Image (cartoon, rainbow, N blue to C red; front, side, top):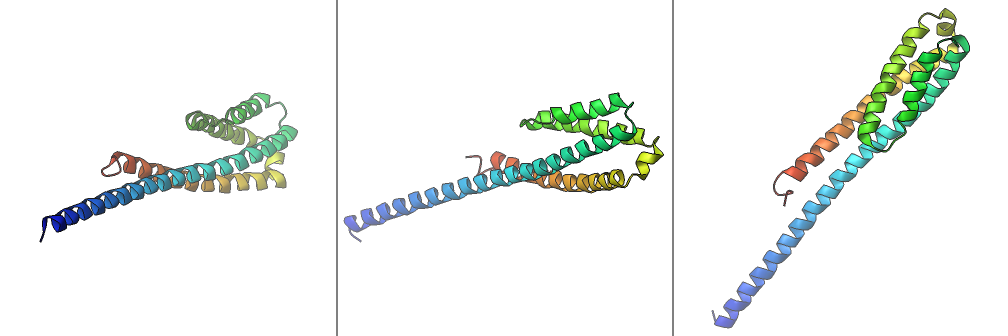
Length: 162
């Protein structure tokens, strides 16, 4: 092999190696973008379900007001917690969701003292719909948490760390 042929072979190998590295970097980048989009999708699923829950809670509060108007403090706590949950910050949203859960449990326990309310068909329907929605929210949270875990693992491990 001549010197020119050897140089051409070395140059070809270097070009091939550069192209392989670029393709590898693009694949890693695309995988990270895809993982991040799965996280965003998971959060969107949760957000949609929480908005549905806010609307159900609003309807539930209106029905309870008709039967238990003197339970104003309990209803105000739930309404205040619901209002605080309108934020884009996931940490603040999680804290507000915890407060909503507590206030909702408190309100539902207060409604036990009102047999007419428990017999109301709209109240029962909303209560059942809220229960089913809580299951959907749980599933959405598991999906979101799994995607966050996968994304964080990808970001922190080799070769994606590079």
